[in-house]
Image (cartoon, rainbow, N blue to C red; front, side):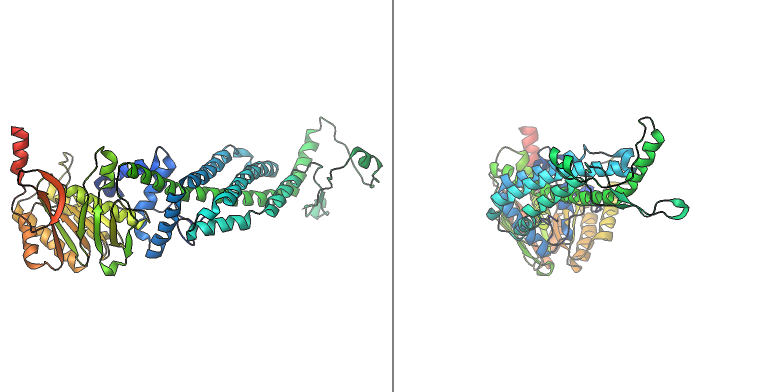
Length: 498
């Protein structure tokens, strides 16, 4: 049995390593806020959500669309999804109580442990079947319909009857019947387990039953060696069935474990959707395009993490960067540029893993990777200057970036004077532009932005943080040429005259 709710044809691998820039992505895009909102205190949901989101750049169009349809069903039937998740969690918690430890090498212990565990799993499987019978018709996506069809096919009444019958017989209530031939050295070989002679009989049936002739012996109650020898004979006989049942139990345990893992992600998505909905945030499943189509356009895009951490409603933005390789964001200090940059990064991450995005509409090409190059605060432990550190991080990014990646720059290369910073940034952008890497660059380097504005308008979209005539920031980003000022005097006035 397979869940296959994240991929059409294989399981999700929790052991896959995370991207090398995991720490930078989590910090720069405030992903801890997103993971906490998805988890609601559930550590497994947090861990699985983190992995699914950060590993989303390995997904193709079909996988993303497959997950989108599965998630739509989850959002329409959140109670059922949480009920299924609770069953899987309960199954995995109960199996922890059945621990063999040092007794794992004894076939009799393995058999008794496997019987108890399978009986526990059997009750959980029956619950899954009841949920299927009650709610399967409410789900329409390919993933969910295949999942419920599998449960109906595999968990029919005949299956439960056969399993219960086998488990009862494996308890050997009437003893263990073995056969063997004398081998070399008068040792028994091979030991074969035979069908148990145990039958449910009434007292009268046993009284008048014809007794078969057989040799027998009786052990003295204190004959420890005799009991040990009989125990070893019994273990030889039941060894094969103990191992077979242990493997079968392992398969069922693996099913519940993977079901719990895959549902953890969707429960996290439902949790996040409910919280953003209460905040009044617009949400939509994004339209998808191939990397070669170079699509990036949206309406009402907002920063989901900022929305989660604020009481008031946040400002959303529109932009059309289709066929544009570079987006420059300039304008007033504290005008919402960094928030806008983060909203783009979050939207791309959420798109890649098949999630909804916090926007009214969004169309984006899928990417091979997402990279961030943000300015860092001064670190007293650094052995070199800030510019050296920035260039070192940029070198690491270049070693991993591909033509179908996206990179977000936030006030990069401003640690030196404007002329040098503009020259360095310009050369880096030009090289990335040649490789068709999608770039979003927030900067106060006027010389840098102006240079691209004058020669590469066809490839570059220029956005500017809006500032009203009285100095008020609206936090809206509008198309406009870069200005030579960032209106730092507004901040000066507000701080020293306010």
